[in-house]
Image (cartoon, rainbow, N blue to C red; front, side, top):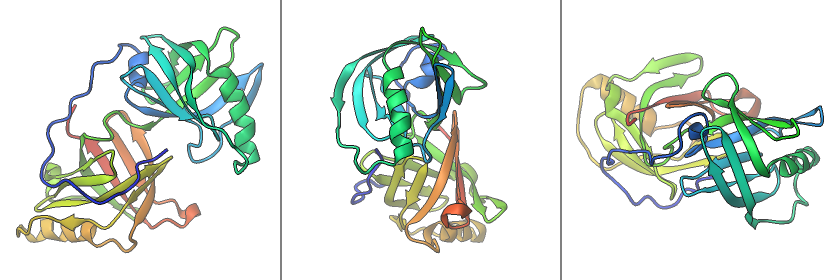
Length: 270
């Protein structure tokens, strides 16, 4: 499930983002973010998750979890505390997995059986890797896929990545993007406001050509950076991304033929 790009409908600066209140402890890290399954161990046998975040879970503040077992999407109730996750019966579950890869189907069967009832939550290494474990000793390793507030939060463009070079921006914190769930993106490029479209699917971020909504002139360095962001060599521009708690990187993937260009985003609102 991704954010589908549609006609832009917002311009101008965003309001300050504020996270809803969730549980404390390690369980609190789960809520409001999207996680991808990396591997599952059942009965002493370990299976690696399918590529490109095909198996994922997204914990809402409304007491539900949506996701995909690898082929089949689902939505069900989820009660999260500091150390436990209790899952209810699926409320919505799609069918029809005929076009799904065999490796995805194999992982799905294991994940679907595991992801039920009461699970213990443990922090594996850091805030972006979390484990779930059932009473039989089976476990799943989750890795942060989309950070909290991906939609609606101000994300400063901390730097651009061009080939193997990190390029800091002359305008600093003035450059920010706000992604909206309807597929629009708004913000400021350092001098001028803009609007556009963006989509998130698995671990791929796609940004379409941006359109300025103001026509101010600023310093030469700032205007140069604006032109880099306004004039992509590829439209749309797709990159793979990875997240930390309050930042995320979107960079090229040479194995997929993606362009040698990327973004480093850092949260402005905490």
